[in-house]
Image (cartoon, rainbow, N blue to C red; front, side):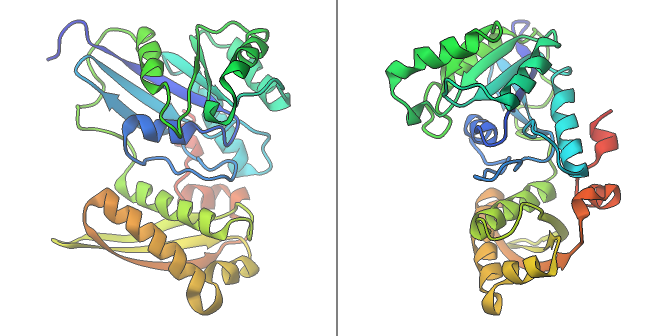
Length: 302
């Protein structure tokens, strides 16, 4: 049993796609849990990671980016993100350093005004601008709504992360931890491995195919020295399948090699990774396939 001054609670990370939510969370946790990519809508599920010290526990809820949906998967992702706002103790709204607030940001502001949860504005990517420009960015956002705190950070450069953590803890209730001190995520290891493979596929393929790929783990058997993993990359068209495989399997080998390195780092064990590619036409508009590939709207949106 921990001391009575222990604090524990939930903090939601929200924001437009590609503002650095997953990068920030991974940096705080000190381990890759959510995949990162320069493509929008990379995070598809509500991922919980746990940061624990001897005085506090912050359960981070990394949500899909709030965006204008184009398919059933998009509808699900937006619903997950918006529901997360009501179930936490504090909200971190990540934005980029800018004086322009677009329609997407205004949509998020309207969502935030409807919830009775403290909101911390986190201006990320401050390493990309001059320091004397920050005041102008803060002033721009402050005119839109009142924030409990405004914290400039650089998730990539690890700048001002400690100050952000102090601000978060201020708004957490006193109480026992929700997870034991060794827990860093509620995600099954199979799901984390699948997401690592998807990240490497997105990076290796770059702009060659649309964003509509998923990864499923067919087999994951742990031996004493080697873990055997069979995984399938799902795409929406036969033409995409050819691109993913590449000439004489070159692209698939590149994806597998990049993924294997990080999987072995994560598991601290050698990995025998075998990748396959299957076509499932328009899977992002199929409730059944969305669920089969690890996104469960009915469970996540309760």
